[in-house]
Image 1 (tube, protein in one colour):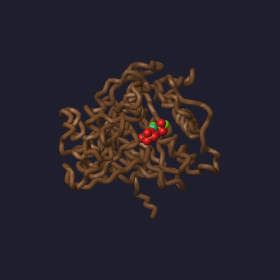
Image 2 (cartoon, helix red, strand yellow):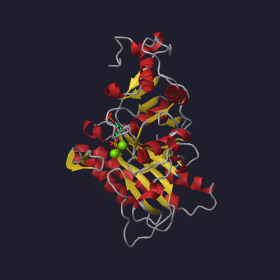
Image 3 (cartoon, helix red, strand yellow):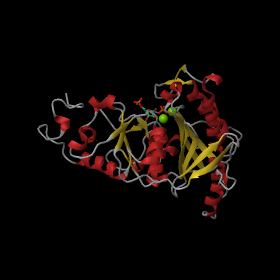
Image 4 (cartoon, protein in one colour):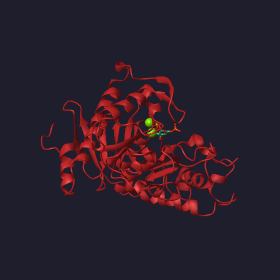
Length: 357
Ligand SMILES: O=P(O)(O)OC[C@H]1O[C@](O)(COP(=O)(O)O)[C@@H](O)[C@@H]1O
Ligand SMILES: [Mg+2]
Ligand SMILES: [Mg+2]
């Protein structure tokens, strides 16, 4: 049922701006440009094969990953929607090794935009939810072209963060540092409407998400945590757990925001050159800010992810987030000495699913 009283994204941003008397409107303009990009990507995703956007390209991105057609299209859409605004001093995307040059004859603003234009790419061709993630930082030298090192700011310095999820409905979830709000896209009106005004993550949960195919590379604290969950009611947790894995960070985040849960893509021993799978600047930091603003906890597994001082634009890191009690438990397991193999924990039993080799 259409409700004429519903708050639009623009109205929400104007109301937020009133809380910041010195605000010029540049920030709101930037968020609306990002929202415009998300609408266009939503359209491309929804049209799928009809628009010829499925499948892979021959190219690889800076991470050495084969690019999907939609990775590249979404990247261009983000660029087109935002680069002419006079609110930006620089942009970094997953799909580009260096910061993206802004138009030579355009003016420079006071914000930096960092984004993953299409997250969960492996899901595109199987018609499962994908998304876009973005983070807004302040430019150290407003009015001038940002240098690569300007983007290396800890997540605590983010001004705003958000994601769009292209699922059964398209939603934009946003934090400007004052809680988390969710907006649902009405494709006929072409507008995001506020439908989830104050999103909060339940403190406790009995649902976890991890790619169990990597179990042989996990470090002992992660093995211990997962094995205790799997042991269910007869194990030390004395409770049955559910497991989920969508392989789309945005979709996992959205589920956890809506009903709680814990997500782990921990540092592991799979590839010593990659301390984790997910990228700090445009995946972990924005999702981390949203999760913390929703009352959850976002961690490297050992400490708050938002405190990490980045060292490179495409840096990877272990990421654990979700319901506060579970994340704190995982951090505690990283501090405690590993249980001995003759322990009662089912993890070390000969027939354990995830037994150590
Ligand atoms: O394929 P795996 O190992 O399950 O990894 C899934 C993870 O990779 C990602 O798809 C990485 O993001 P991109 O698709 O933007 O590269 C995450 O969304 C997801 O959590
Ligand atoms: Mg991603
Ligand atoms: Mg991506």
